[in-house]
Length: 115
Image 1 (cartoon, rainbow, N blue to C red):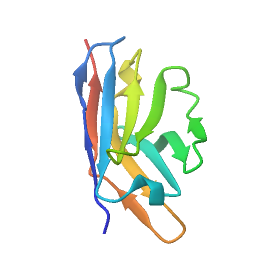
Image 2: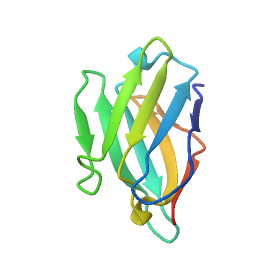
Image 3: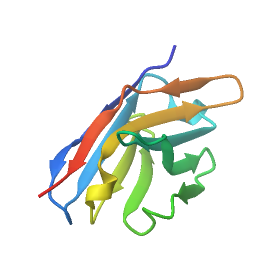
């Protein structure tokens, strides 16, 4: 069973930045894709950013130009760099790794954007 552990969340002022990390117990080479999702109170979970095994990326329209997903193969870690944060970015952010026969989720890390 692969474990995903997120870190890097916290409280930040509007306009600030945070970098989320998702450390995996398995090799990220083996994943077909890794994603970041978020869920705000009272809202459904939404896909924020995704990267395929081939390196293709995809972003929600609401974060394009502000968020960047990346991977460090040596550290088996996936990152989400978040810049120009807005109050509406407040949510629990979850890391997700998937393939044809598996689906792994992290426990989430809270991001709060508030002055």
